[in-house]
Amino acid sequence: MRKARLLIALALGVAALVVAMVSLPQTMMIEANAAGVDRNPKAVTLLPATSLSSGTSAVTGSWTYDMQNYDTATILLQVTGKSMATTETVDIYLQYSPDYGSTVDDIVHFTQVISTAVNTGTYVVYLHHGAAGVADRATDDADGTLAANSIRNISWGDRMRIKAASANFGTGDSLTFLVKGYFQ
Image (tube, rainbow, N blue to C red; front, side, top):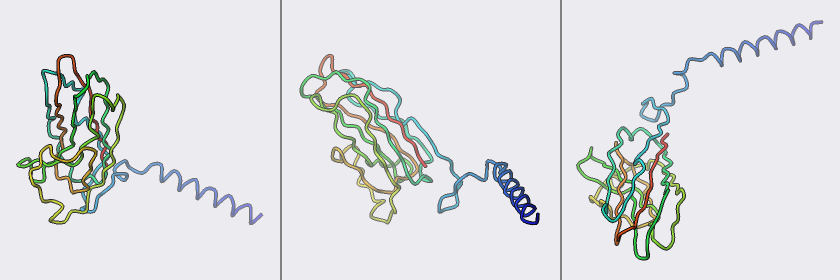
């Protein structure tokens, strides 16, 4: 009988603990980074569906702000349409500004989209906010110069954007794509 009472008391105690955990306020689930800044995961469209064609050789997206408090990012380049002849190329960059927009530098240069190779599909890049020292934060204002298929593990500052440039586009050539980012 004593064992039965003990088991009932234990079961009631576990049930009360489960109820207490379920009823925690939502604010208790917000994560804080090393600096103690509250943050929630952020999903952003870094560049909405965009078409490059013979009349548009380059496009630069708007800045996305308040990125400095996130530690990781998953960036998706979705190439949704392609009509290119034989010598066309498109270079797509993820860029940041370490100094609130005064200078621009590349973080990622996606695989170069060329007329004979890359087809439609989704290309994924995983980034981790670099443990930045002085050298990591230095910028050479290298806007659109990072080698194709490259990633720099650096501290990415407070803002990001997408830049795309095409070369040798002729009449009828086009590329349609968009870029999304998921930050934590």
